[in-house]
Length: 166
Image (cartoon, rainbow, N blue to C red; front, side, top):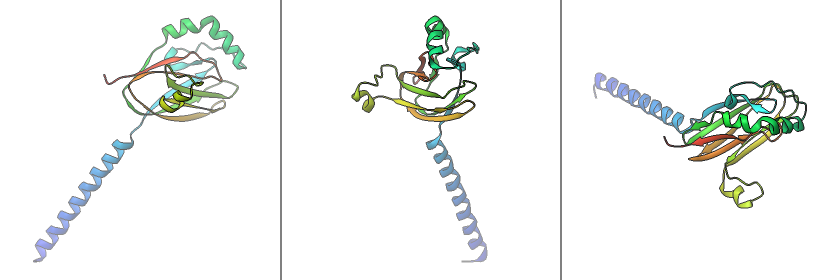
């Protein structure tokens, strides 16, 4: 082989390796892509679906139970429904200013935590530990259907999330 064809062969192999590396990197990025959904909790509510901070003053969950009994139905009727496509998501939830520990719970609309079959067959992602100012991620893969999300520790309304292909 002459020196020109050896150099050409090395250059060709380098180009093919670079293409393979780039293609593999793009495929890996697509396979692990997760969309981040930001949600912010203040007293007795999530800000994003309600579109406004009602400035509820709360020092315990019972305060929210009373507030939601008085205004929850009306607020929920006006709340924005979160619409997503099927896929993997990270729900990034922040406790903006609530002075006690919060959590997050996303589940199928008809999920019944008392039913052991639901625990095996339906979607439910939850966790606590959200102290004032803390942000925490909750990963979930969503299929087409209707879901609810809320905080049982800072009782909020059950906000609706709809996943569809369209």
